[in-house]
Image 1 (cartoon, rainbow over the protein chains, first blue to last red):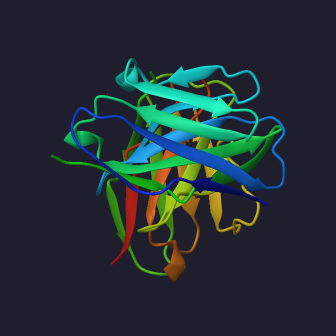
Image 2 (cartoon, each protein chain N blue to C red):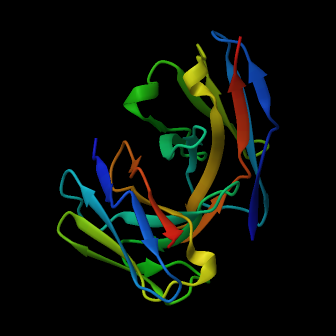
Length: 119
Length: 108
């Protein structure tokens, strides 16, 4: 079993940046992507992007191009999601997820990180 | 970008009834790369189905998925009290991936 442990809640002002971390614990993951998905209050799930931790390649939703950076630290197996130029509409719970590992579906999700953007 | 349209927005049913949820893709998606998730308030999504019709580990067999062209269906054969939640479809066949807007299954 794998747990994805995310960093704690953040409160940011408009125009600032936020960086959320996601660290797998438990069994060692072999070949996987870390997805980032957000959910605004009372709204649905929104796919933001993902990273292949082994090679560092990324894919982003067009909506976030230029504002979103997904990275990883291979030494700690930690994934990061950084969103810049924050606005009030970015207030949401941000989740990381590992849906497949080595071709096997597991559907692991982090506990979510609430990011509040307010002046 | 593939747009997933879920219907209905809300489904009002009683325990024991059958629930049929639809997810329509705006373009053809090859090799059935579609998943379904269940989400309850304050919780992360839970994987139910992947590859359009394969149940995830530990998911009861009252949940089933099917596909016909660009139309995908999640069926809950007999609703249990714990099944009342919001359900999302998710396409992962190409980038960018997308989610549908969700269907809420509520108690009638």
